[in-house]
Structures are given as C-alpha cells and as structure tokens.
Image (tube, rainbow, N blue to C red; front, side, top):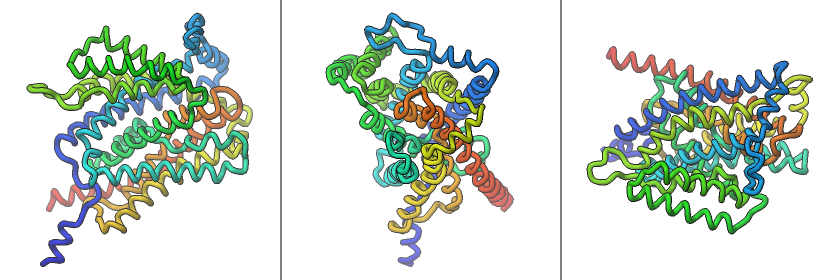
Length: 420
C-alpha cells in the first residue's frame, strides 16, 4: 500500500498544464505559428532574391541609408541595421513581457515546475557552445567569437513546425518548449549584453534609466498613452544604442517594467494586454523584415562548398543539430534518473527527442549573434548565414520526422481511448 502511494505521489515530468495557462499558451501558439510561416516566406524570398539576376538590387536595398544626417546620434544606419537594431527591439520587448509573465504568473514562478525548463535551457546553451568551440578551435583567431551562435532557439519557427506536424501532441510538451524558449531568450539577452558589447559607454546607459522609469511609472498607473510611451521607448532605444550595448536590450528593459496582474475589475493585466497588442507586430512585421535582410546569402559560385570549408560552418551546424539534443534531452533524462521522476503517462522519451531537435532551429537570434560576432559583410559573415540556415533546416527536418511518428502514435492512442 505504501509503495503504491509513493508511486502515485512520484513527481511527473510534463504534467498537464492548468486551464488558464493552456488558454494563454493557445493564444501564443496561434500568433507565433503564423509568424513562423511569415519568417519562412521572408527567408525564402531573401534567398531567391540574393541568388537571382537582381542580386545587386538586394544589396543596394540592404545598404540604403534612409537618414544619413543622423550620424550625430550614430543613427546613420542602413536598412539592414535598422531591421536588426530597430525592429528587433519590438521582438525583444515582447520577450521582456513574456519573461515578466513567466516569472510572476507562469511556470517559472514555481521552483518545482521551473527547475526542469531552466536546467534544460541552460544545458541547451552550454552544450552547443562546447560543440562549437571544439570544432572551431582549429581555425583559431576570431572564429571563436561565434561560440554563442548555435545556443539560440527560434520560438516562432519551432512552434510553427510543431503546429503543422504535432497537432495531437500533449499541450504540456508545447508548454515545455515555450517555457524553454523563454528562458533561452533570457540567456541569449544576457550573452548579447555581456559578451558582444565591445565599445561600452556608461553615461548613455545610465541616462536610459530615466525614460525607462518614466515608462514604468506610466504603465504602473495604467496610463497607456501612446503619444507618451512611444517617445519614451524611442529615447530609451537611442540611449542604449549610444551606450554600445545592443539596442534591442532596450526592448527587454521596457518589457520588464510592465505589471503582470490587473487591478480590481480588470479582465487581464497590462503585460497580457501589451503582449496581445505587440506580439502580432513582432511576429508579423519585425521578425519577418529582419529575416528578409539577414537571410539573403549568395549560394552561387560554389557558395555552399566554400562555406563548408570554413570550420565555423560545421561548428554552428553541429551545435544546432547535435548540441541542442544532447543538452536538452540529456539534462532532462539525467534529472529524471536522479530525482526518480517519471514522464507523464501520455508521453514517451521520443517526444522529448523531437522537441530537443526543434530547439535546434536557431534562425532569428542565431543570425543576430552571427552579425554581432562577425559583422554583416565579408566571407565569414556570409558563411555564418549559410551555417545557420542549413543547421536550422536540418534540425527542422529531423524534428519533423520524429514528431510526425510520435503525432501518429498519439492520434492512434486518442482514438483507442475514445473507442474504449
């Protein structure tokens, strides 16, 4: 009797999510799935354009500077830089809102539920970085600057693949992937701020505290005046940009100031309201436009063969495809053995293998880190784009095979339960 009670009380991995969290997850999945499709379309357009007879026009558009007089503020940026530094700030603002919600009201507020995705995310970054360093070590020089490229997960792409081929997979598995990606984003933000800030100026960064505080005060008071919040956000962005820290960090700082819980009769909190308003802008505009300018790599004249000769390319691909699986699946399996936890009865370890492969779709943040590590021009910068595209595609294909088989098994099990 005691042994039976101990087994029933044994901790389960990926237990079903509560109803409210399931509804929030469903809303996020719908938006991110559409966003993932748009990003894919933008990436395909970029590749076709960059390898077409009109390739020169792609380069010309990317390098066009819309405001050359902005040099006194360091804002004489070309369109490609505006996409990566400016539009992605919207993406990171939504990430900041997600992080705040997860830590205050989501899975990460509960240490018992948070430990699994946090450990999996940490190992899912450390192990790919180690794969990269081991393979790229022979190249020496600045090749090691790209160690963080394979550590990122593109949640929009990953969820889009999951939505297309994994309709019958349990919601707890989707929630795990989303929480994992949120923690992954937090770690990626930290990596960008700490390791890819070369020319740091403290005064502008300290000055950015003032508009951030003003922004936070207004949202705390529920004063959602666009004519005040947008200028404060823009001022914060300019000051962070001038500090030498990547300007997208401004979006995270602003997102952290937004309260999660509503007051009195409010149906939803300010963070959820802003996330609902800005997520479509992020997923439908900011990230696809960034992909359009970032994914345009020329594959003509033996581009792929030349790229594979650079150790950085197999290092990135191995980190994305193998490192993520070893880090995420390996850490989860070890935790289960050490804590004597069991998978939920609806799941198999092969489900987790599929999700771990999905996490190897790096794309957006991987391309961004690649630009920070190796710049936007030159052979190695182009090779990194090839590596991220090929690694993400290979991870997506491998994940699709595994999850398609598991989806069929879950669908069959569902039919049997209903028939029984």
